[in-house]
Length: 116
Image 1 (cartoon, helix red, strand yellow):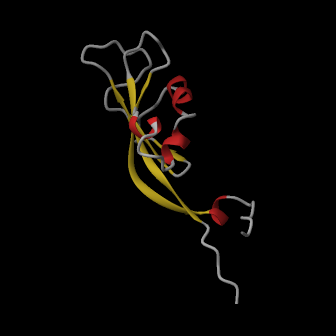
Image 2 (cartoon, rainbow, N blue to C red; image 1 turned 30 degrees about the horizontal axis):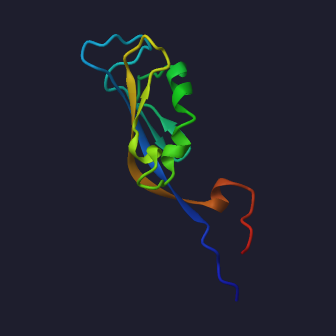
């Protein structure tokens, strides 16, 4: 009888929250404390809250990397704030890993795993 292959992998859930220095000008439409969460590949916003597509565009390339486990010395592990793409806006977006979620390869893609 063939042993069943473990096809699981883990990703961090993320929370992305708006921060800014006190009195700093914010032009991207964000409010301090606004946030969204990433759970797997799904982005979740609180009811009634929006998020600038320009700010989101600056964050999107970083989110999959922040979801993956990284070496303790990797800058992706330690650096947590991303500047607003508007150079005149003082807001920052703090990315926090909030938990670890397990996924199955077979449930996330049609491409089969290669046998060792």
